[in-house]
Image (cartoon, rainbow, N blue to C red; front, side, top):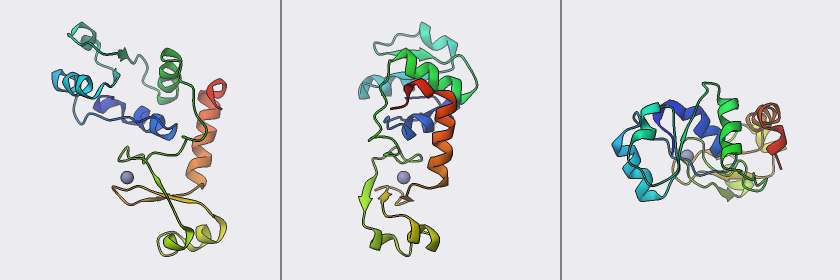
Length: 152
Ligand SMILES: [Zn+2]
């Protein structure tokens, strides 16, 4: 779980397949209580959070740059990225995507995508369709730049 200032980091974690909740406000007692109830690690930029009473894991994120933040989190928790889980979570909703048949998305994706792509996933909450396209390729490039030694 991240505080509201770490939305970009949360998206990168979701891209890698990690269930990541973004707390809608600044870190505080409510965030800690929710993290405790859901058994989540807390990622925050608020230095004073380490002085609070909290039984779970809490990591103070030191840098402003999302690439470095991602690298720090991966190293801190020795995360082993699973290639099969990458791109498996909705970036907006943090919901697990479900595969959908190509025929079902015919009217939902641009025609050139439909012609060129065989596999699609859908978010059960916002119903957005995901496929291997430019976004994913750009994301892979970002990861190759910032976390090359951690990619599967
Ligand atoms: Zn969604």
